[in-house]
Structures are given as C-alpha cells and as structure tokens.
Length: 498
Image (cartoon, rainbow, N blue to C red; front, side, top):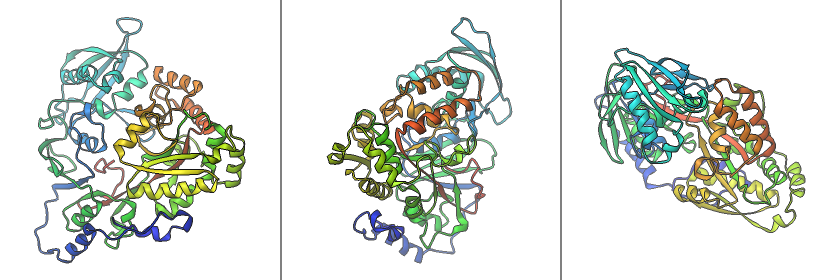
C-alpha cells in the first residue's frame, strides 16, 4: 500500500508499524504525468467534473443513506427548508409558512406558500405527494416521519400539512436529505439538474434544467483511490476532489489550489456504556490520557482542531467560548483511573479497541492506543471493514470504538439528538449506548417546542455531556479540496462537496 510520508515525522510512541511500499497505482500516476499531452483541447468551462469516493447507493432521497448519494441528490431535488451554519432554519422552496389551528388538540396545521419563479418545477401537489410517500414507504424513514398526518392542496403554490409535536423538530426533519422533494425518477426535470447517464461504479452525468452558476453539465467520476483523482486533476480532467491528508505534501499538490474548510464532523471514541467498569472516573481518565493536539499536529499535518465536547470547535464558537474540555494530563488521568470502580483489576483486562482498517484510521488509532497504554491499560486493536464494524457496534460489541460522525445538517442539535438520545441506541446513532434522564428531558423539550432558538437547551446538554464524558472527545479534521480554475476557491459555495 502507499506509505504516507508524514508518518516519517511521527514520534516513536506513535509508530504505526513497518513502512509500506509504494503501490503500482501511485507509480502509474507519476509515469502518466511524465507523458501527459499538453497540447490537448481544453474542456468547456460549462462542463464540470467532480469526484466521488464511491458509487451512490440510491438516487431516491428516502433510500439515501450514504454521503455519495446525498452529494449528488442535492443537485437533483429541491428542499422545502434548509439550515444554516448556526442551526437556523431557513425557507428554500417555501416562500412563507405559518401555524394555524388544527382539526384536534393533538393534530396541528402548517400552511406553506411556495415560490412560483420560473426555476421552480415543483407544485404544491408534488410536495404533498412527496411527503405522503415519505411517511408511507416501508423502511426506517417511516417511523421517523410518523409525525406527518397528511395534508391538503389549496392551489399550485399553496398547501397545508398536518403534523404532531413541536414546530421546530418538524421544520428540521423537513430539511433533512431524505425529505427533499421527490418529483419522480432522477431523469425527470425537478431541481437544478437531472440525471442524463449513470454508469455504475464509473460515473454519473447531470445536465442543467435551467441556467445556473455551475454551468450546463456536471460529471461525477467514481474514484475510490485518491491517487487516481490526483492524476486526473493534473490532466485537467477533474475540477474538484476531496484531498486526503496523506497526499497533502505530495509535490504535485499546489497550496494555492487547496480549499480548506472547517470540518462538519468529529472523530471520537465511543465508550461502551453497557460495561459497568466504565464509570465516570474511568471515562474521564481516558479523555485526559489522549494527547490530541500532538496527534493533530503530527498525523493530521495540523489540518484539524480539537473538538469541544462532541462539537467541532468552529460550531461551538457560535454559541459558547468553551475550549477543550479534557486537555492532555497523564497525571490527572492516572489519578482518576485509580478512583474508578474496577481499579486495579481493570489493568489486567484486555480492552477491545475497534476501528476501520484503512490507512488513516489505523494511523490515528495506533497513536491513541499508545496513549492509553501509557495510562496503564492493556489494549487489543481490531481493524475491521466498515460494514462489520458498524454492525457489531450496533449490537453493543466492543469496549472502545473509533468512529466518525458527519452531521446531516449544520447546527449543534444535529450532533446531539442522533448521538446521545436514549431512543437512538446502536445503528440509530447513539453508538456509546449512553443514557441520562436529564438529557432525555432536554431532548423532549426541544422536540416539542415551537421556538427556533434552542441555545439554552444546547448549553445545558453540553454541560451534562462534558461531565458524563460518554466518548473520548477527539478532533474535527479540516476538509481539504483540490479546486480547479473553473471553480471559485470560495469554501462557502454550494458547489463544494460536503
């Protein structure tokens, strides 16, 4: 496999094993660049080429459970609402909305007025049909959208929907990718683009339905190997690709073509709450024992920031000035460990540390495990395939599991509700199996409120999680993109891949 050069700078205590050798794919990349034909015709600026790490699972919003699907779908289907970086819910396809008295004490009415400009091909009947499909299609989405209770169309641009519960949670769930308005197969005109061609595991081609700021066509190339994407980028056959950290110092990568965006996700270690030995003192000891800043500096090339509890620091800065909760302090970690309920017997037990088996996770995991061993613990590392890792974690297996969460939506509640609610255990998102009655009260209050400002509840939840330490809170890696000259290097544009 390819050996990332930045591992040369890892200290001996973060050593991850023998250095692998150069792969054929990277050698092919270097040779291909030597024979690159500089005289070929230039591509039209109206046709853009983006990379995808994997083929989309589905282009049906209801069945879009992977990141590749959601990346493509955002160009095909419109959304009623969207959420900005501060977690504020904003109308999108909706022009205005208001609450009205419902047909009963439990059932509420939400009246929607839709935009009627020439770019919108979506009628009120299409919207209602999409929502009805969402709540009636068998599968995991059905229970999530059981709060929807039907609706009525008034005109091409106005309708009402019936729902139970709080207005805020209703608007938030109507902003999620699975609730984007489905007008039929992706080949039909609906949003900004439509699907023109899909060659499985190779490429997808979208064509514009109307003039827009991205041009007439987008080609998504499925490129599991980042080195292949780098080769195509320097052949001017790729306009945008996500750049892994291990390629950051490749001599072919130019700094002025890299767009750096503060991360929308966090890496963390779920501490299995089903294990009685993992009490609060034990969990806090683990948090103090990991030298997160050194790992970010060495293994992430400084392209990341320590998370503030479960939140990326860039997100927490919008509502609190809190800094790292558990800075590295090995002495304090050992003191807390000695107070834990199973000490000293816990020192003789082999703890399972599970993680995905790719290069990046193995490097990060090895550094973390080294820190935990310095605390005095015995750790057994289990690199696993993604599907098996998530399946077994969802069954409550394993002691410590290195995971990553990328929020569907901006804002702090997109990190709290799926990851720490007592009704989301395992594959629902709460992979630490954490539960706290006080947290459940907060979730219930947020889910039932009509207020869009939930900052007081977020701060209270943050305080509880800081004290309970259900995870080893780690870091939020920055998102790095190679951006071609056909795209502005503005990280806030919608053309950036999430």
